[in-house]
Length: 68
Image 1: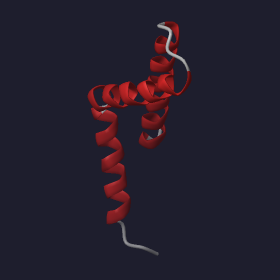
Image 2 (image 1 turned 180 degrees about the vertical axis):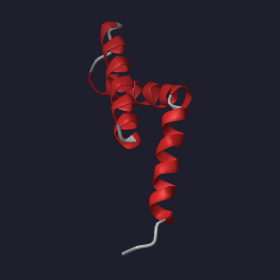
Image 3 (image 1 turned 60 degrees about the vertical axis):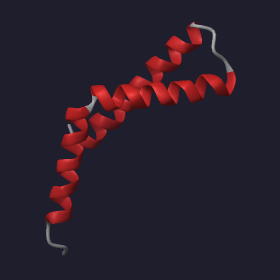
Image 4 (image 1 turned 90 degrees about the vertical axis):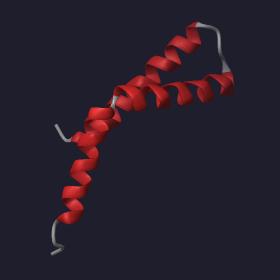
């Protein structure tokens, strides 16, 4: 599967998990969304380093190809 798709789906999954857990803990409205974004961002920074490296490598490969 394409690394960008894997990384994107992983980020969305982490956000959904954070959102669900925080909802069950009683957070509501915009506070729920804000905290879920921050927590999922921090978690993805730690947990998705391999996927992020794969995306970076794929992008650098594409940029290195001659246009045409």
